[in-house]
Image: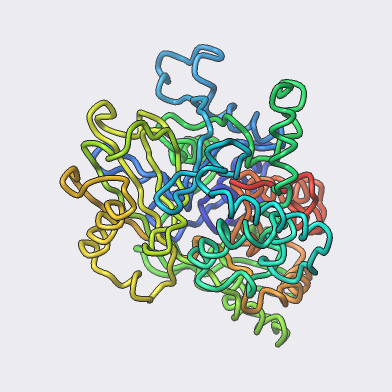
Length: 490
């Protein structure tokens, strides 16, 4: 039996394994460095209080992805689930997210409601309107993320709602970030899109297929968080004959005569080599290129890969008796306030009441921080980090420290591939890797592209399609989420 080694047990890796087993007679061997599966799409369980790392709305413009998800976990009651699997279902949830700015809530995306104008004030509203008109008359060259935003919202709105938050997320000013990030995450979002949505809302049933992802009103969600779906997929992969090894880190990718022949790994059982006929890699491009053995890496590609930057991620889980504010329906809230470090907070009760052990009497909040591995925030002791999160939750007026019942925290390395550093030279990395016929780069880190979960899955599906058809082309794999129809945003 021919084999395909898959590096990474996240959405891309597990999708690739599942599809290989469904469509071919190739055996997948999934190698995951961590002791859990799902990557950033996992669910962390703290005594029955579940944390969704980064927040994951299950919505895609690609109907095949929607069908794939509900094929794994059916919609609750549609059809009625197997009595033995009543907990393995998808819930339909309302999409509500807002911005916390100047201790006031604003809709996200910015809406044309009276509350928006009231919160901004007359002077800022007029300034925003004229700023948008000016941006349409004299658009800037889209050489940076800053110019990308200004062209779609005008400078005043950009400075109010995008500049500081983006700097907080990426650690650098938007003027230093490539416009590609906006092109892949918020291409269709603009003041014009918001106006169009407001006008078409009464006719939404006819126009829903054309609604930007940031403007959707509902999404589906696993009853116990995104990790439930990927744990189910992993179980199916093993049931169908695939192999999954956790705590198994790839230390080298072995190449002979220009083709991958296997990988060297380190696990609790020691070092060993696993042979393969194909390699599907969702490991960071930087690590993949560093790990290649048996061929010469062009200097330009090696330097570009070495300089690719990443942003790391920390979340503090705060279990509360209550929030300080009345009914807060949001799944997550973007924190634009300059006087705190937190970038975003989630309210897990609103994702699914089953995410919380006692949803009637407690509220479980995730305080999300963006950082770099090894910096001051990353190196904080867990107790100090959790205390910071509680203090900032209180500072922005969301809760009282007196209502805190329990705290916890978690870290994620290389959560977000970044669009600065040597990102502008990433083409040389891709061109070099594409010369290896049986190597396919898939997923967010595998392509160094800030894709949504559905796009990561699609890269895996395209790779499996090529393997099935005997094609060594990589064009369709890299092309996922580069055409305008696929541009989406959380």
